Image 1: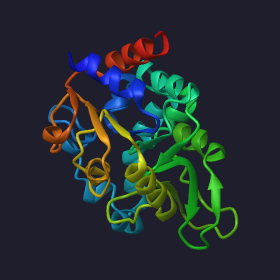
Image 2: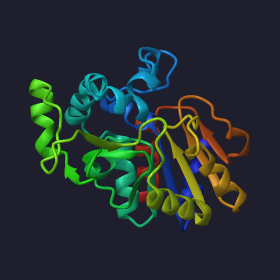
Image 3: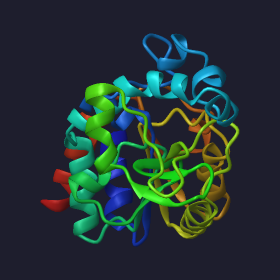
Length: 249
């Protein structure tokens, strides 16, 4: 019943925005940060390895921590959930994807209008002269030998453009994300427990503006009671079925 209702709502929507979290990428082999069983923050203190202050004081510790994650992201491939959203966007049924993920899998699956609200690993910025660098040239030496990325202009350390604890969200991306959230007719939350603020507030902003809300996530969220549909199942199984049902009708 919930599945069919989701299909009906999305089929009729003229302006759907999707909000995705770590749960859409775990089927691709990328570990979650906050799950109770094997989340990364169960093994590491985020303020010691992934905060802006920690990076400034001990960047080597940050890069030691992130090296295995970068390796997993490089090897990961988009899963059926990513592909389903790309298919729906290509058909004109999704306006934008707002993602909390830094893995780039939405773009690699074919999604075009992606707002990376927590940044990306595709580029790095010098902590001294602020020159931006593309990450591609630095990734393999880092993975092979642990070579830390240094600015070719001034020699200072380069920081990946993923947002760390204590760091502000990229303002332009945040403003665009708020705008599409407040103007959409349907928001689909996929693979997010909605625990990280301020992003967790976007579904509430959508609901307050009159949007319908669909949530597909393994666990419950704070806004389930306000949702039109809640499906507590695997996004990699549910989203492809939804896309098939809509696109074949």
